Image (cartoon, rainbow, N blue to C red):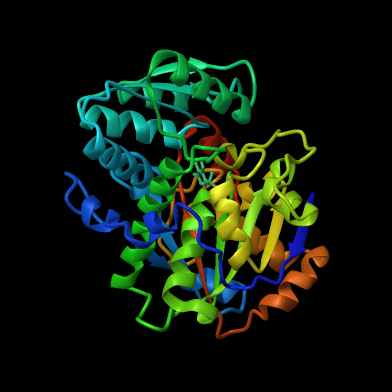
Amino acid sequence: MIDFFLHKPDNEFAPDNTTHILTHNDAYQFHRTLPGYAPTPCLNLHRLAEKYHTGQLFIKDESKRFHLEAFKALGASYAIHCILEQDGNIDTFCTATDGNHGRALAWASASAGKKSVVFVPDHTAVARIRAIEQEGAEVIRVDGNYDEACDRAAQSCSREGWQLVQDAARDGYEEIPALIMAGYLTQFRELEEELHLPGKPEVDIVFLQAGVGSFAASAIWYYLDRYGPDRPKIILVEPFEADGVLTSFRAGKRVVPDKSFKTMMAGLNCGIPSPGAWNIIRSGTDAVVSISDHFAAEAMQALYHPAGTDQPVTAGESGAAGLAGFMAVMAEEKLKPVRDLLRISPESRILFVNTEGATDPVNFRSIISKTA
Ligand SMILES: Cc1ncc(COP(=O)(O)O)c(C=O)c1O
């Protein structure tokens, strides 16, 4: 199953009460001081580009982010650092997660000598729960989906006096999600060392996967801030069964999609988009594509078993989703309007972010054991 929505963005967002956090952030400087910090690699997949008759396909590989296998470490670590600068007496940090953010929060809390409690939806893979526990968190499984886990985390924080560090905003809770988005900006700052030039992004199209939308919003904010109308075209990719951003675009406001929330792309299996992210996403998204799981599986296989001399990439279900969206756009008749918008040619330079590695190793092995 696939769907798409084309959008005409105005390339400007109305400043809100968290804009200063993104504008004045020094997350990149902060991350560079962390033990074990190294920029994640950006690979050029020449053979895959040839296959699609396009210029260059770049993939920034966040599976190599610290030992945590996902970009989420950038958001949680920066938010906790900023929170503790204001109040060093906080004892326990808490969040809800479908895996990666919770693992990152547990690691960042333990690194700061603090406790952590992490709520997970009932379908969360055992390996993901173990990985969070290994970083020192107490994990509580909620009988419900991601949005319900978020509600439980927020309620428990009010009751227990824990500090909520959630990557999705809600009314009256905007600053910390904005700090998390500011942390994600480090990925794009790192690209300035090898790809982006001042005044010239050197990529024409960026495919970004979306869950609550904070990751995509940080990228869009970065490109609009640096390049304004000369930014690359931005395509968001979501699971067909959890397409909160696409449905919200269609409705003209943030809504929960009437879908099954059955997808293996666990990191993207979210309902309503985060309000802080939505404001930014609206101003700089050119199209949204939603895809079923088999596209993600094909992208995982293509990355792990690359053609010719391309370097293999270990991409989890959500990590491969950006490339999966591109593969769907190139293959599916229904997505021709997106192809027409992007005008992909032998000169096009396209960027993806592999946002996670094999964070559910059982599912990962079962997928990559089948040939692309
Ligand atoms: C691997 C991965 N990619 C992408 C995302 C999407 O990020 P966001 O929820 O900010 O849209 C997530 C979120 O958990 C994730 O874990």
